[in-house]
Length: 213
Image 1 (spheres, helix red, strand yellow):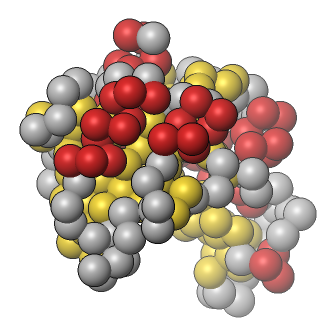
Image 2 (image 1 turned 180 degrees about the vertical axis):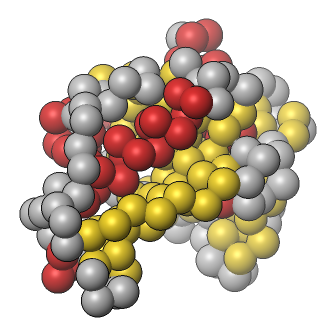
């Protein structure tokens, strides 16, 4: 359980780097992190280190602000019975882990991949020969851990291996920066792709949103 908590916390730091948010800080809740998001539909997010139903109940009771996310590395069966009325569970998600040796993948000659780099963030963009955006992905780095985020292929360019090519390019950049472990949180849309690319399941993630004001 401690190992999963550490992975989930590492994911939070890398995710904030990928999104350009301020780094997470220790929360007022026990064994938890908090980071601000500042959007109308998401004030911020708690990452709970204690995955028990009792800890979740205490966390939900402590949240007063609307549109606050609480993320827990646990099964839905363990957490959903503890959700208060009017809170909204998000769709199932999974924390997944891999090394930096992503399967080699290159786009077809009709596409090129460009990479923009900053201190702790990479963004890879695939463009069609006509200049249109075909796919993109972001990588946030925290220490020797990298977090993949927002891996998206435009619908008209689907099934051409662009998602795999984006991830492979980000993996090469991560290895160049000394990263040894990669993390992501997958939805049901991407989980099968990531498993084909060698990612393994670390934990289920239950994410719940406090009600609007």
